[in-house]
Length: 195
Ligand code: URA
Image 1 (tube, protein in one colour):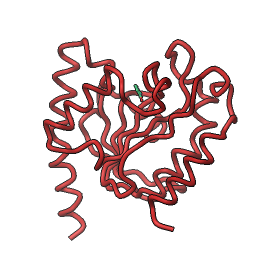
Image 2 (spheres, protein in one colour):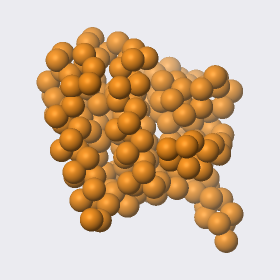
Image 3 (cartoon, helix red, strand yellow):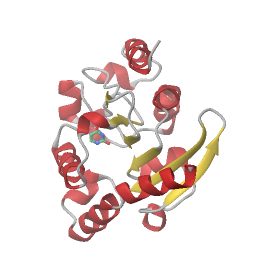
Image 4 (cartoon, protein in one colour):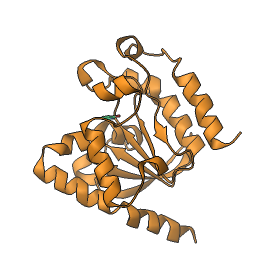
């Protein structure tokens, strides 16, 4: 089975999931979207209202901002992979509870195992916390960090502020944009270190 088929199978399983209470309060599961061959995987927090309505990640205001930033660095949305820590919308867009993030964690790990991205970009504190627990986003944003996790092996993480948080906050927006623009350089460095 190729990666695309594996992702399709995984998504079929994900949409039947009811491991936590979020599923009963949302419209549909939002598994993620993009290329199964993506070099970069962006991981947000969880679907919002628009995402819940359309079944696609990052399609609301934060998504528009993410698209804008991707365009600035000449990346196409269809060539990256975009997913979330939780695949079902938390009521009133509240933060996912630890037990909800934990219930959804195996799905995210499977996505990473299939896609094998060169770089995992975490969007926001909750996404960062899953992979880099105990770190402070104000300290580690814009820094590439290697970490080995038993389920997914050695991975490189790049932490960014969440586009929704930065959208209406001038200085955070500037910082996010600056960090985002460094993504191609981070990828280049990963490539050159492989040689
Ligand atoms: N915010 C997220 O974290 N994920 C989405 O898919 C949309 C908004």
